Length: 191
Image 1 (cartoon, rainbow, N blue to C red):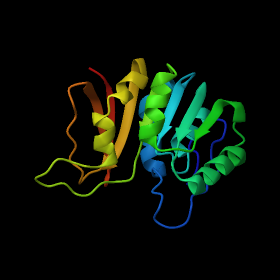
Image 2 (image 1 turned 135 degrees about the horizontal axis):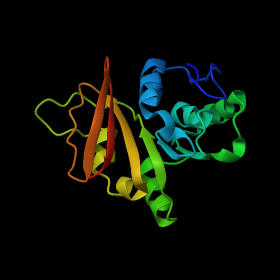
Image 3 (image 1 turned 90 degrees about the vertical axis):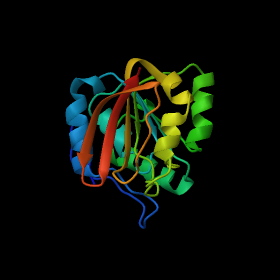
Image 4 (image 1 turned 60 degrees about the vertical axis):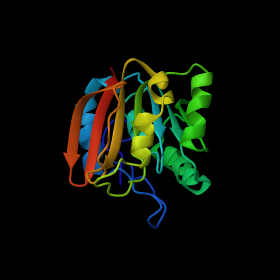
């Protein structure tokens, strides 16, 4: 896994061994960032379920103003910190919060912080045939703090498994869905 483009292009990113982390594949990240284009420049970025930090580090490499990355696991957070160092990205532009996403979001809202881009590719949920999804992706769609964290005109990019049928609440307007094998990326903005 590597940073695709920008000042840190082709720098390798480390990930913990095992199945605890499922980094967003390079091809999926490349497609997402090609679609975002210039929107990344000077953007304030929030990455939820950081894992390796690949999404926020890609943003910084492409000229984002700053990035906040939220990751619950302190073990994974150590990999993220090392990836920032290895990528030689400006440390002062990167902020890591080692805590649960659903605890961090209300705190960020209380601080009055907003973001131009919110990126989340959480752990995949179960296949949900005939029942409403209980995945982290669905929880993010349903969480009323996510729209409060999005700056006017901002985008929420949400990854999930093809087998996870999500219900998009009326608060969101779906702009695009990118499908790459089992990975789907939804581009949403406030309705």
